[in-house]
Length: 139
Image (cartoon, rainbow, N blue to C red; front, side, top):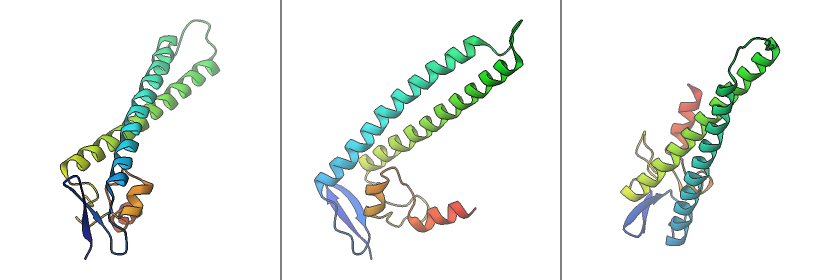
């Protein structure tokens, strides 16, 4: 049976065969997540400024070449996609921080089993164990 590791009164599970979490490792994960939050907030602000410029240019106008209009629309769609992706990543990082603070970090949101230390070190925003993630991707 997997055993939880203790760090600052927060139980973080590990899989059989994994070393328990150390406080330094937990601190590093938290620092990485905080850095991701700041990076995504900056990326969102930058992309939103780019979107404002594209919206200010408009999509139509007297004398505008249809190819230019199409290019502007394409750029706007790309920027909107980047903003949404950054927002999703920001939400994931903030969720991971909340789960860490609440003592729920490292537990799969679907099956309740440990996600695994190695997976969380590689992807600290993970909320699913490998089995549940694989099932989700097959759908």
